[in-house]
Length: 278
Ligand SMILES: NC(=O)c1ccc[n+]([C@@H]2O[C@H](COP(=O)([O-])OP(=O)(O)OC[C@H]3O[C@@H](n4cnc5c(N)ncnc54)[C@H](OP(=O)(O)O)[C@@H]3O)[C@@H](O)[C@H]2O)c1
Image 1 (cartoon, protein in one colour):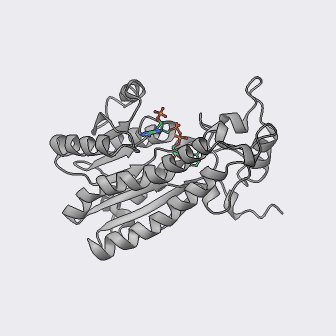
Image 2 (cartoon, protein in one colour):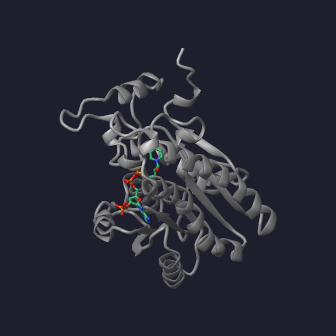
Image 3 (spheres, helix red, strand yellow):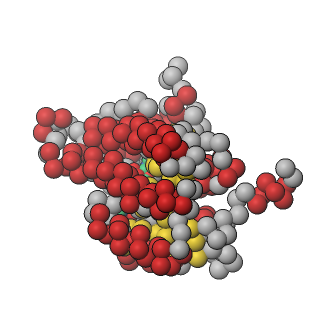
């Protein structure tokens, strides 16, 4: 394979990729990169204003196209409507990134809120958003891939799936479920539908975004909390990740450069998961 053939692997022209939570910090960065590489990107989110704002971030020279479609990952009917829009606009779906997810302060233990006091509603919300919010889009949009016998699903797991982090019980359990489901679906799709359908996940380490800012930085001063400091101390690269740090792995897993890779969960964590602490 020569350089031109290699770089063509990352040319996403005429390929359609849907991103749940596509208006968020990490999903938005993936959307920009994919449009830049020529893909048709479907930004699925609940916050239409935020999603529309993202459209202005695309480089004028980008060769792909993006559309914003309402989709709540916990509401089947909205995902079915989104599926109809995708088929009407593009006639096919090549890839799905399940990026919607997150944690909530009231599902997090703290000096003021013990594990025994975490409200059931908050625990269910976080568990459902991350796990069911990955399974439902995989059913409804993954079916298009099963029908065509081709496609790629990329889930967003987390460091806490390998070993749970303190304080975030439901989020850790849900992301462990996402990693497990990734392996399950990879086998199921290949055996029952087509070996040309691949399912993988990335497990980002620590990226400072709205969902974890309250845990990692002091609200008033912006300085690192003791938890934020511990994370940096345990990250051999000595920093939080930036959204662009995810792009190499995302493009690789969505492209045919990873044609023989399925059922894996790739840590993108500055070495956090490799470090014993000593
Ligand atoms: N940041 C990190 O350090 C980190 C580390 C590991 C894994 N992750 C994972 O990476 C993914 C993206 O996180 P992020 O940091 O980019 O967070 P983010 O900026 O909050 O993005 C999440 C997006 O998901 C959307 N969303 C929430 N509930 C939804 C629903 N029911 N249906 C559709 N969309 C929904 C949010 O929109 P709304 O505004 O409507 O809520 C938001 O646009 C998440 O799965 C997260 O768990 C993040």
